[in-house]
Length: 276
Image (cartoon, rainbow, N blue to C red; front, side):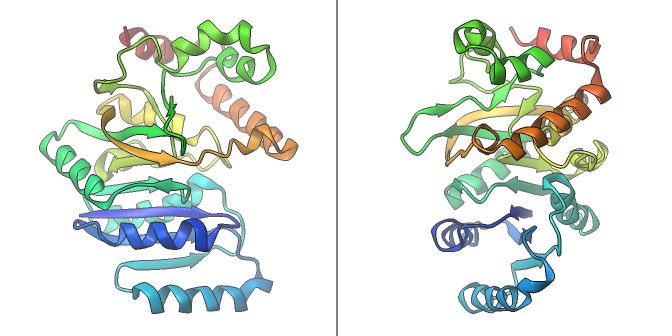
């Protein structure tokens, strides 16, 4: 069985959320979808009640749970609420995903079946494309400070060769790769592996929580980029457009490097060296 959690923040209901929910409810192994709304202060009670009524009328409530958080809890902390329910009910798989994803229900079922057949796989991410069909390189090596801050603040030509390696473009991406960093836009998790890893580290408000969780799972499980299936991601890259989000990104990446090491990170060196 599978649970799916989606964190919402000022979502585009008609364009993104409702069509996605309609498709996800076709997943055969689905137990429950959690919509975790981080844009829910007290003054929106009437709007929230109306949205609940709309969702219930369109899709019923048996496999859909809408939760208004009351505040912006951050990405990982909100997802952990649903992940803990997956652990409590012993739901075998849990899909963490963004609402700006387009995916086929039958592909999710196929991915779960593949993970069920290979019990050493703790996490899986399919090939990710932009709406125009170009590839997003979201399976990566573990980043150094230069990988993170250099690609944001240094000229592109200066980082080009390093980015190629960081984004695994030096590898054959037509085959599965056991990568230590898989994007948080679509994380198909074996619940047992996520629980063993401690779920998302809630000290991060957003951005590096996916790096942190994947590398922790990677210690004992396979964390696979698996290009047999493809999803579409309308990646907004908000921190490149919004100065506040850029500052949030910088702060949280500093927390990440404080935890794992800025220069000396033996595990980063070891995991990245294994990718040849």
